[in-house]
Amino acid sequence: MESVKKMKLVIGGTAQGKLEYVLLKYELQKNKVWNGCLPNNTDDIERKEKPVIINHFHLWVKSRMISGGCPEDEIMSFLDCNEDCIIICDEIGNGIIPIEPFEREYRERVGRILVQLAKRAEEVERIICGMGQKIK
Amino acid sequence: MMILVVGGSGSGKSSYAEEMAVSLARENVNEITMKKYYLATMQIFDKEGRDRVERHRNLRKGKGFLTIEQPTGIFGALEKMETGDRTVLLECISNLTANEMFSEEKAKTKMQVMEDIICGIKLLKEQTTHFVVVSNNVFEDGIIYDETTTEYIHAMGMINHKLAALADWVVEVVAGIPVIIK
Image (cartoon, rainbow over the protein chains, first blue to last red):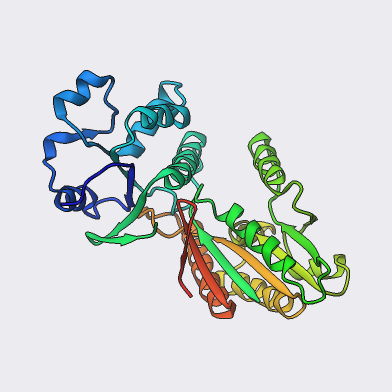
């Protein structure tokens, strides 16, 4: 079993089997997964144990944008305390630029955050048809 | 040498393409740094457009690019450059295609747009030392659009095909990471 000591980033299109890929690869259970949210505090994390798996990371970014937060800074502070985690995120930027300004900003911000996360990650994998392609 | 750089929104394709252009321009046999031109294609209509251009200008700052605004008729940029060795960065095909398609009262067909753009690209490739072209992946959102947008997506698809065939290297930028395709 592979262990998680530093952050790993898993990206790919929707419905490509990203979560299943991660659970299988690291022999983890679904109850460890945080869906579209980050654990608030260490109690939360202890309850589910490490490593923390953040699924649907793009939805967390969207919810922080709607609440007027700064997902760019927030995720970095989170990682400062929880380096041993797996972040799973949809790739949402490969389409026609939306007419709606919020949607446009959302795609760009998710893209730019992923660039920053990929720099910090120990490993980056892109999942296509359930298969992992290691790009870093 | 011609390089095609593709990627989605916020993928980091622009900064990667700039780094490529800067390093290619440095690899000059005469050890004289060659002229670097940035062909800007974006037409500015509002504050968001201005902010976007400003962000890109800041990214390029200090890298020694001379900017040529060329929203349509891309070959026209050639007469605005000095002769001799030169590295040219064109950003980006998605704007250029939209401008070519929708600038006149009646939209051009995808074939016409593709032929016009590829003709200009071939001229630029022939007459530059290094040519870096940035294009966009607009093909994977699964949405069925109106006829005009569909025509645009198809034009982009055909143009990307031709560009890849002309290019020596094709690189997809994913989360800032270059993935070599050709």
